[in-house]
Image 1 (cartoon, rainbow, N blue to C red):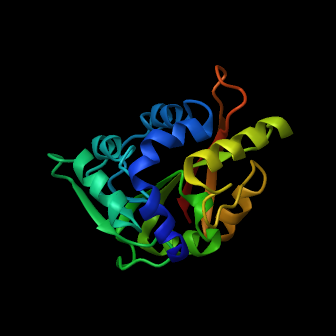
Image 2 (image 1 turned 90 degrees about the vertical axis):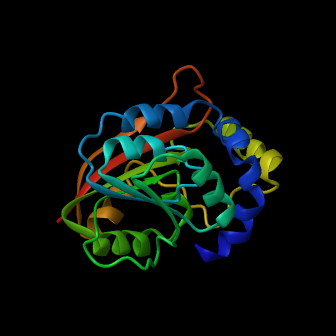
Length: 214
């Protein structure tokens, strides 16, 4: 994940204005609405908080939240977004190898981050820092089901916004490829839901995954 630091530092100021354009729809809002249905998350760690889009809602659902990212530019924007929320702590951490003690959290959440990191390393680290029975929640954009023309348009929008066809380290998961990676890391997958935006069928869809530490 460290190899992407300079990229995310560079695009932090344009991320919020560009990500929905790149996705081609309202997927972030759809994920936010899905996340609202979660309950009693306890002590939560958020990896790849970015500009803090999901962080205030996580604070409502949790006893406390530690929001983390690998870049200070992103973290500065999160700090602005969560001003006044006393239960939120904002820290620089790499989800592939953190400084947290084992069994420190009840829930780990990654919103639009997991596809950018080393999957097995991240799952292993989250398994280490969650308490027994702790929850893992992932929201991951996917091109699964898109026509080739729509995929090319998504790539083009990415290049126009960030100057590259995809962020560093990007791996696109599917409904079938993602669960085995999580189960091999010591989790039981409870459900995988594919989220779509019917109003914008040419954009990314999302995989919303809920799992528990075995």
